[in-house]
Image (cartoon, rainbow, N blue to C red; front, side, top):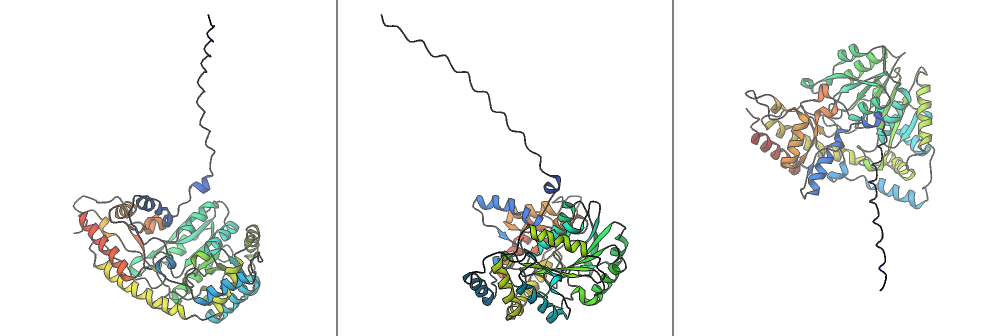
Length: 430
């Protein structure tokens, strides 16, 4: 009789693999908020479901069909063909630095030396390197309210405290200079001006810029001024005044770039200009220079195209502004026709910052808890993406939303028709 082979012993089940412990992220990174792109996450979820979302959240001229001048594109191409494909000096290509100096002399009648210019990967990198080199834990930075979100986020990232000074909605969002004066403290390290302003589109007169700079000048031994002029030539009913022209004696860093005026946000090309009459910014400037070395350099071919942009024909600026003014006029009229919405008239950039009067309680009932809930409900219901005003500063931005005015009027009209329908459907009108 054949022997039966013994059955193999059952293998004991493998113990469940323990879930690896989550490594802690840094608080400084996890607290970062950027409302303009944070709202894209729910929009992408809708797109994944097959919906088409009309996007009025990001200030990207290219997405709305605006194109940079042909001579810039040709210069970019030529630089690549000529093998200008290596690193440049960390501070910037000397050819571009010289072109920036010529531009400032030509437009603003102000003089800079080559050592006063740092070329950056967009103005956003300039903000990051500047605050990284100047803000110590506990320092305060005065920022307009409402304001472009990276100012808040990056001050916090480096351990500082953003303090918002008031801008006055009933006066087309002009800065409250007296509020600025009251909020300067012994901890204040820098005071920021954004002219024209993002998100409100406000444009400040020479008188207002001078009043603002004079307040900063009263405290120039302890702080400096940051003048964000990225939209300087994108104006409709006035001319932007460069801060250095009215305050040459105030320590100041001016931020500018090519993304908006030259319609190339994806090229990531910006610059910083240093005005340091007393030498008080030397350590901060050295810190920025060292930071620029760590990130090596800015795109070599984009910098050559920047030279062509500044030295070449400027015809596209008037053409672009005429198109944007038409959109601005249409948007202001149409938005103010919608019951539950009101907006000031922007004089620069390409944004409107309407007030959501429809958030007010009607008969003891509120349709939305706040502007963020309103914007997300509008997105989910009507498939139109805007940005909640509190994302530009809760104190002065709440109860509003930012609308990008780059798309042509038929597209804006569709968005505003949907907005009116949405508010009426929620019973939030009188």
